[in-house]
Length: 90
Image (cartoon, rainbow, N blue to C red; front, side, top):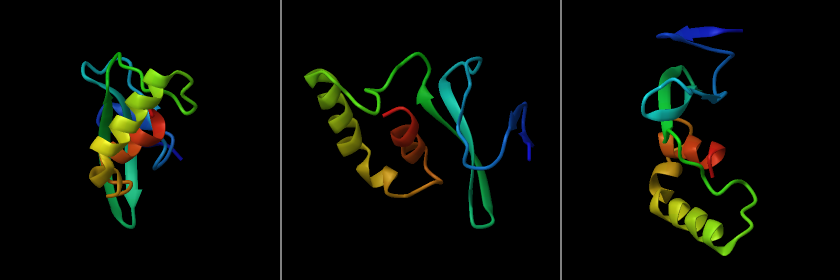
């Protein structure tokens, strides 16, 4: 199933994808929760997270700081940009 939203085509709901040509956001996802559908752009273009398995102490500290700073918004679930940024970039 493909879904077209604006100028982008998504392979389905809740499947994030890179947006290399977007000027500010690095990723986008067509989030669906119940019967609500929302296009969410997230992540700063050109900035990497610490990765899923951070090795160095500085990467671990960056990841911990991000998760602490955005904990309230991550807890909101699939309809928030912080949730997707934590899942994809961090």
